Amino acid sequence: MKKIIISFWMFFAALAFSQEKKITPILLSSQQLIADEFITMDSFGYYYFIKGNVFYKQKENELLQYKNLSLGKITHVDLQNPLKIVLFYEGFNSVITLDNQLNETASINFSKIQNNPIVTTAAGLASQNRLWIFNSLQMQLGLYDFNKQVFQPLSQPFQQPIVFYQTDYNQFYWIDSNGLVSYSDVFGKVSSLGKIPPFDLAQIITNELMVYQSGNQLYYHYFKDNKSSLINLGEKIIEKFQIKDQFLLIFTNNEIRKYQINLP
Image (cartoon, rainbow, N blue to C red):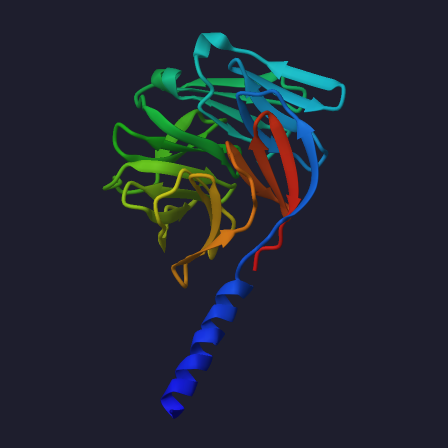
């Protein structure tokens, strides 16, 4: 009888714990946005998005745009620094940088780097006027120096292809085809964070926590515990999400929904 009572309370303790871990964001606002792809919103309230392969910056009645259709599709946008926006055009092996008025400040074609042409499949802004670059020819991560116009490899060749990447000034994060999450610092030291379940979109929040989308559901995942928990959202369609400054932005059906979210 004693064992039955203990098991009973363990069951309800586990149930309560699982319920405590659920998160329900609070809807704060919604705004119509006609776009092919939503990128982000900065701390000044500007929305960045792509429509017809043109890059836009918008706030209320103010609208700026950058268009370079000769380079094909915009593959990736890095907006860590709104004063130095990085547009990556993978099809033409090129990067364009823009200022905060979307004026072009630099144009780099990695196929024309003297003595060391590279094929870029990932690009993002790094510290000290450099770019994170993944060279798929050698399957190596490295840094490109804007001033010296030189690419410096950092890593040994990767064993698995990259299916997702994310950068900040000091780290390059990636998820490989086996679901393994890793990162490298600017000195080339590589660390593993763990594995995650299959996903469609992802955002690494810290070295302990990430949020990912699978289907039309969002989950948060702690690497240490290797556990994923559902974020109760109620959205039927999620085309893209982003977490920024304790806000969750959801792009769906030509609308941006802004939620307050408190991750545990």
